[in-house]
Length: 130
Image (tube, rainbow, N blue to C red; front, side, top):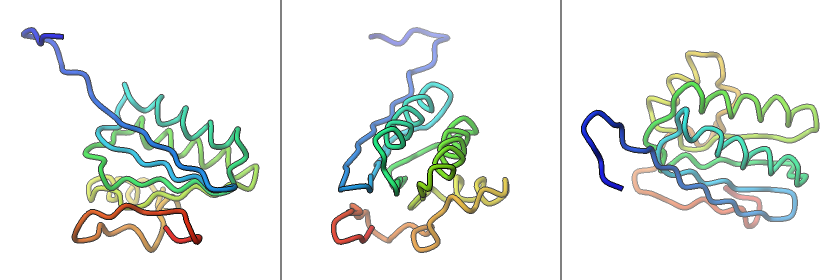
């Protein structure tokens, strides 16, 4: 598809999900915005439907997240809490972490994984460690 003057390029988001028993690791890469937030929510809602008790979301490769993305996380958290499911966000970009804190949504952040490591790491769900 060619880009013409006056049009915006489509945002890109890659979503990967890895399940282990009742725990899911959802890895997001790219931009979370009005166009891609429904994809994020659909994946997280699928985790809830599938009975996942813990949903870990790796944000290491997220380059942007707007309010629609934050809303997808908050909605999933709210729905999951009623069913006893835990949603935790890991390694958010600094700007995203700041918005999460400023909006009073810091409860979404995993306290051990808010600062990004010096070099990229791939979290694992094996052995209960992320």
